[in-house]
Image 1: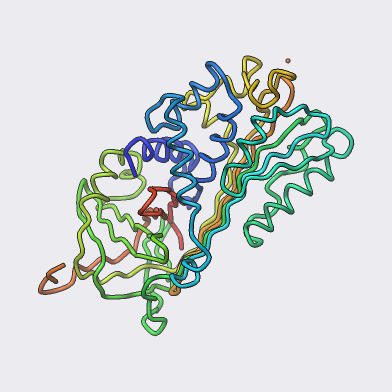
Image 2: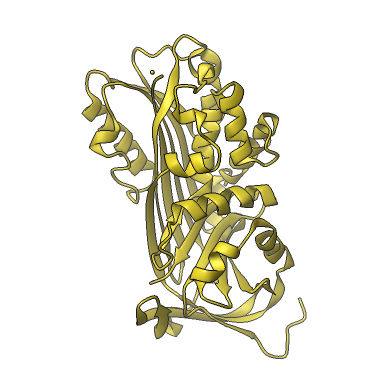
Length: 373
């Protein structure tokens, strides 16, 4: 994973997670980048340049091919490998186009080349409620029921011309499970007061680092999926805004195998957000304006802009492993190894961050803030 990838994740996280840092939140950089990548494939001119600058990795339109390749690598877990390694993934990238929308053949071909790429038609003009239901059912199916009602009733209208949807589901078992017998209630210093939470415990070798006022322990799961637990030395509300891409990349790179006695709460965290304003803060503005150039979608036959973009995610961690799901929708309308003598003790008993990523490709599936497990 390169620093520019982390820059996009941290910059957008800062805007999506909100000013209230006492609240838990999770989102999927992978899902949002996939949906934006699909939009970029149909964008031209300054619209494309703005998306490229926000996404990276090099900030140039030509570099988006490398991003698409990394996203594709992150979706490649072979069925046999998944079963053996205890990891399964499902990715869908779908263009839902109105029956009357003239979509360019080149763009259709591009969509179908993405992981889980598919093109479907919907009657947005005649039956927006039915079209919304079809999209939501498809997302629910891909995410194994974890993401429901991605699109609210007012988000699909008669003037909707197309919707780009990414859906992601990931389930991965730990390479070595946390022993259930070791889980017991322990205090967690949550904002607003201590709470008793079921806390898992394990002592074994894992990658570990201490840098920049953070501690990191990496718990390996199947097929190259890992979960990085990031515990700040000070309050998360103060430390999180100061965490920059270079620090995070250095922390991950510095991790080396040691014996760690890790205490980690079981948790489930959810998040949802509108993406338009946060993306505009990152410089993606033309996509949502009448100056939008998505001529690659229709081959210039019709002018389109993005009316709204929405995102939902959920992440659960327990003794056996992790399960997460996310979905992003972009709505378009016409334009107007030596073991230490004793283990490192890492007790996660206060708000912390979690990254779920694929080591091989650098794909960052989930970024979560946990404040009250």
